[in-house]
Image (cartoon, rainbow, N blue to C red; front, side, top):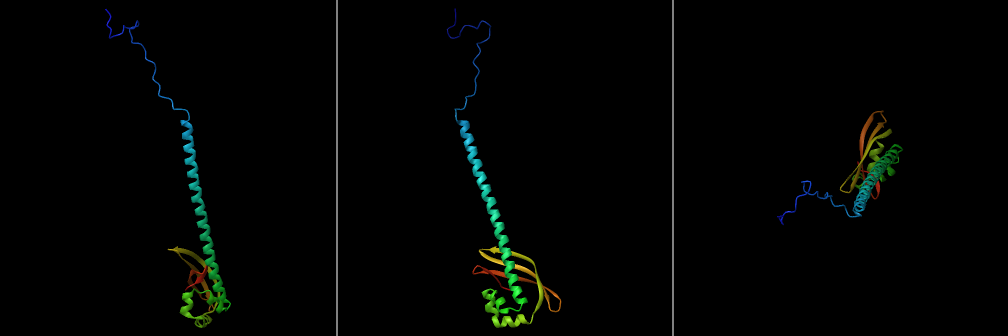
Length: 165
């Protein structure tokens, strides 16, 4: 008699073969969603990189402009001294230095220290806590032919670089 709980044996002696189990297929459109996410991430990353490169470019350019302006201010000051234009050189001093020496005292002190030439050998600009300062290293040849090295310190006042030392 046949057992109602067990099916009859397969004629080959092996149980019937089960259909192969395949992983579920992604729903249509999932690959497009992934592609769209990757595109958005790529665009955002590209924008960040472009923004950083732009910032570096303008920072370097501004620093180069600032060092050029510091050098030009120091050159104008030294040229005024070299040509004996002490009033003009005095006007290139920072307000603190002008108060310390006074225009007449400055002219008297500078007329006794005549130079025959000068050259700017170095320059730099620093910005600390919103205060810009510059430093220009100069080689000055005096009337006696001796070379003197000096550092001029400049500060930014009223949008212009002024000599403060």
